[in-house]
Image 1 (cartoon, one colour):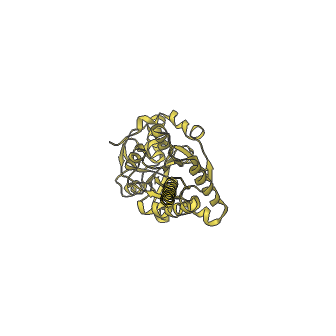
Image 2 (image 1 turned 120 degrees about the horizontal axis):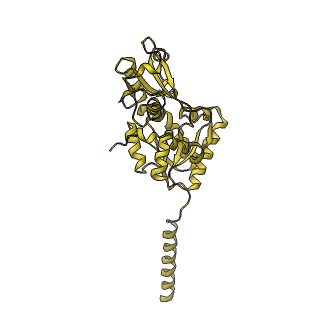
Image 3 (image 1 turned 180 degrees about the vertical axis):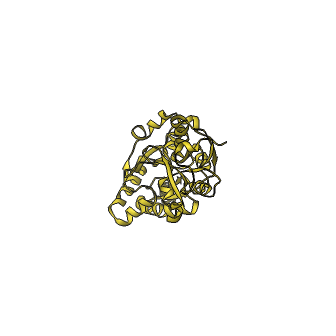
Length: 284
């Protein structure tokens, strides 16, 4: 009788040990959560409205939770990825260089339908007619390291065109446009995507004075700690969206209208040759 009790107890303990060990087995992606941080070209509410539907879709398609991480300014966004906090990033081309050098973030997809061009806008009814007219004036920029709207633009003005300006940093593209319109700055830096988000009347009050050469636009990038299975699943889910009208609309909202695979070596490493580091400002 005692023997049977001993056997029963042993069996119970064995079953309990099996159940405990099973609780530590990775049963797939269901218990995982990943953050995605988006460069704040637009106000927080606009970014949320554009990106949250895509993250909801990815959560369902991939089988993990994707959480949107938002910062109010570009310097705060930079501090975040320079500390390797986000798992995924949507970031500008030179941020891609910074993220690669800091933590080996890997670009995955970018919009193959266009090139990124920075623009300088001035009042349509003003006296400024040529880029040389901006010599010794104040120009508004979103942030020092906003690529097309500021970083690349300031390098071109100084190194290629040879004019001196006084930069003022006003946090967002929209603020740069508005500082220009009300006369707080002679010109404002931005990109076509953000400028075209403004109303038709607002756009008509400004004109594009100058644009930079085009480069491969913002990629979706991933930290190397994220497994290849997750990376592949995210890429596959995004490419699947190109097959439906609603999916294409969702991609267009996040500046990935025609997603194509990109690599650092082929698409972004060339930016290391532009001597942009002289114009980079790292916030403390």
